[in-house]
Length: 80
Image (cartoon, rainbow, N blue to C red; front, side, top):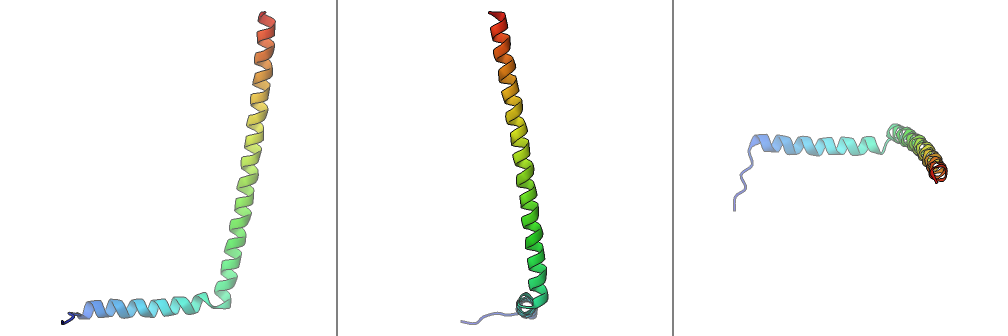
């Protein structure tokens, strides 16, 4: 069985292998670690802010529902 490898495929394979080695070397570097830590920290802060905003919205909605129920109950009592 003969494998047909043309020059174009060999260049792509070699380029991919070299890029993988460079990426692996970079990911193990201190600079990449600092970038990763900063990015994750910003992501966690953003998540906390979004959760706080969602909680605030939920509380406001619950307050509105409570007020509406009280007004509806008062209106029912007044109509009787």
